[in-house]
Length: 312
Image (cartoon, rainbow, N blue to C red; front, side, top):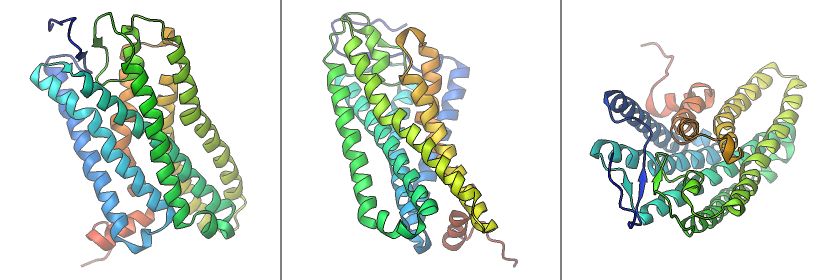
C-alpha cells in the first residue's frame, strides 16, 4: 500500500481493479472498450456529416451525443489506466477538480440532450405537421447550446463547492475517478447541505427528465399503435426502442447511484454502476444506433461500401 502524506493536497484514487493479473486483464478489456467507443463515435459523427440523408434534426442531435461521448470517456479511463500501470494512485488537487468538472458537465449535458432527442421523436410521430417548425435548425442549435451551458453551470457549482470542503481524514477516494459523492466521506464537516444539493440537482437533471421521457414515450407508443401504415409503425417502433435502450443504460444506473442516501451506498457497487454510464454506454451508443437503424446502415453502405447487399 502506498504511504500517504497527510500534508499533501493531492488525492489518492484507489481504482477499480486489484493490482494483479486479473486486474491487468480487466484493464485491457476496458482499454479495448475505450478504443471501440472512440472509433465508433468518431465514425458516427463523420458519417452524419458526410451523408446528406442524415442531415436531419434527429441525427444532428445524435452527432452531438457522440461528441459528448468522445469527450466523456477520456475524463476517466486514461487516468485510471495510467495509475494502474504505473502503480501511482495519486491525482493532484487541480487534476481532481478538472476531472470532476468535465465528468459532471458531460453527464448533465448528456441527460438534457437525451431529453431533446426524445422531444424530437415525440414531435415527429405525434405532431408531424408541426415538425419543421418545432424542430428547425435554430431550435436544434438552441437545444444543444442550452444543454452545454446548463451542464457546465451545474458542474461548476458542484466542483467548486466540493473542493472547498475541508478534508481532514484520509484523502484516499474509494473510486476510479474524482466522483464528488465518493469524496464526501473524507470531509471533516457535516455535508448534509451538499448532499441535499446533489439530490436536488439529480432530480432536476436526471429524474425529472427521465419521467418526462417516460411520459413522452407513452404518448409516442399510443400514436404508433394507432398508425395505419404497417411500415411506418415498424420504423417508429425501431427508432423509439433504439433511443429508449440508450436512455435506460444512461439514466437507470445514474439515478440509482445519486438518489440513494449515503447509508444505502457501497463503494464497490458505486464503482460497478459507474462503469455502465462512464464506459459501457459510450461504446454501446454507436453500436445500437447503427446495427438497429436502417438509415445509418444505408449511409454506411453509401459512404463506406459496407453492409452492401449487391452481388458481384
